[in-house]
Image 1 (spheres, rainbow, N blue to C red):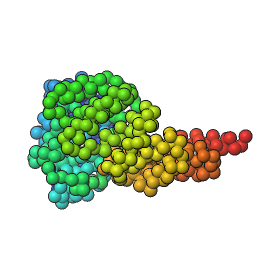
Image 2: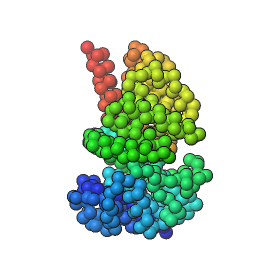
Image 3: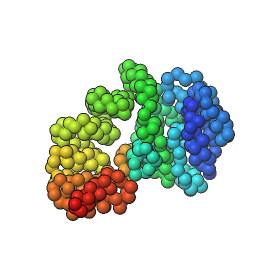
Image 4: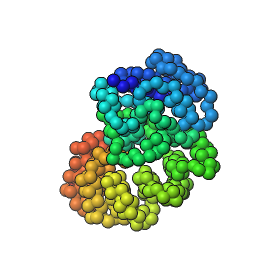
Length: 371
């Protein structure tokens, strides 16, 4: 049976660390914690969970801190997490047996990023994320901020078709509204990203991460500028810009109300990623905003047909289900088709009974009909 080491870096995480470490106790055989200067009860909580705590002088470099922990890990596989995450329940023996029988060196876990006020899998982004990897074969993290595994270096011939999807989930709380209210975190991240940008050989992902930080700060114009720079950078390196860039691009354009700037390019993005339901959903929203209601209905029906189980892309829960049905209802309502609108809203609510936008619309239609 394989041994698994949990590797984490932390600082002042007493509010969520116990929840995180409690979630992994049945799976991992070793806990390596790199503490970068906590002044609260973080270190004590780590010791309560039997962790090996390594004290590390913070040098504004997340990857180096993570790599310091990796070098101390003795397990056959490394699980890496953050303190604001929780490992879902799983069959520990089955998961370890799966790893023991695998020729692959990296495992992908279903990551659920909560985004609302309360944790809800329906109010979240879902993606398969590389959170488990084989130890002692050269894996390490790069970049001072938004660190990434050196997958291309260790496995140069690796393709998405090889993804080993593991039967476990990780729940991430850090994108919820209460966390995003902390603007100081974004400001810190931007300063670290600017240092990376000043390096001549920086990765195009750095520009994308700059865009995401400005997006979270609601500086959409600056976010769009960095996003376009990231797309150009990938193209200059003769690489196809990843799907995340196009998802963010059309999210920004829709948010800014630049519908005319969005509708002419969305089909090119879909052509590159035809199985990405979020891009199809954005196309439907763009058509809806242009008041092309009949065409929008067809697009949203295609979203429903596609579904949202393809989590090799960052996928908004509902883009292939209740959100799409809600927009079908909006389109029918604007076309004067009250019965069809009601059916669509009811369909959305069957999929997500607490979906407030559909409940409000349904109550409004019913209220108007009774007057």
